[in-house]
Image 1 (cartoon, rainbow, N blue to C red):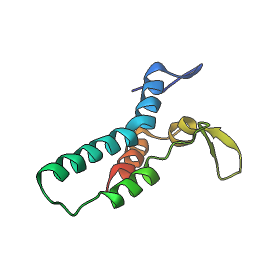
Image 2 (cartoon, one colour):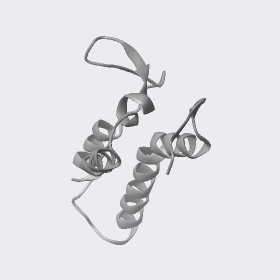
Image 3 (cartoon, rainbow, N blue to C red):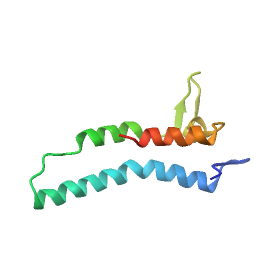
Image 4 (cartoon, rainbow, N blue to C red):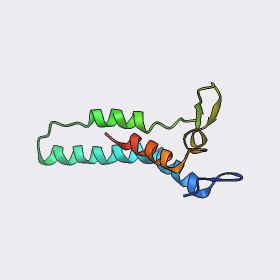
Length: 100
């Protein structure tokens, strides 16, 4: 997948950003539906609080799309996390964020 073009972020890159932004909300919806289903059918002791806490930490996306780099300069989230990274490093970084 080519995330960047000479003019900036590609269409596929924008799809990735949109997916990443919405990912934690989708997972929260699934976990809430499991809790609601189980509340009706079985008595369960799990509330997913640890998973939800980790989710918000691992998939945090800044509201202004900006990240401050180690030099104190703001840059776009997608460029900070994926530009000039070898594909294998980007994939590893994504997988590290999604593991529990």
